[in-house]
Image (cartoon, rainbow, N blue to C red; front, top):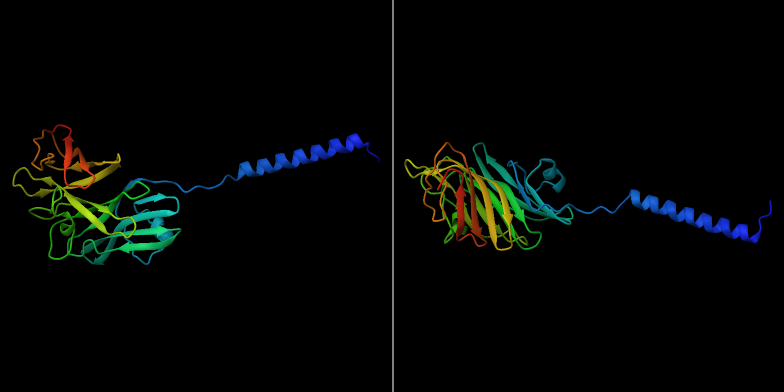
Length: 250
């Protein structure tokens, strides 16, 4: 069959258009994958080691914050039958950049269970503490901060918030965040449930048992039963609480 020059030109244009359309459909079906940004993560503490791969730690659902190809995870190491120590790790492109297990190495049963990262230079970790023991713990980072120690007593689980250098995992400074037993002044339980950052201040939401602390660290006066939903707004350097509140407390 012989085609006229005009028909041949039309068929060539049509074929090229069909090819481009098919190409477009294929491209639309396979969009480029972008890494998910996760700024804040609070969860259950899980155990892992510095030798675990990122895939292994992620599969355990350890609290994780990520931006691009960089991710941080937090948890604990089971160092004996009745003692845990916190662990924090960074991966770049799935390769370990650093891993820190030296923040608290005492007999305090400590874990890590929360992170906030702005994707750049602001990284906070949330850790638990059950009392002060002899040796290296978060007290060495908390001198001059809002609360410099666990306080009196032992057993109730409280929180420690640490500002961490994302580049090497070094703790710059930290503060304890605890409740206070209204009857005897001993330290009482507090568990962090959320973190947010506005560029200057760190807002912390927590469950606090009898009783939450005011910004000046004194006990609030509360009615009703605990735990209370508690919010404290820290300055970025953790030296001061700008405001503290809890429902049914003053």
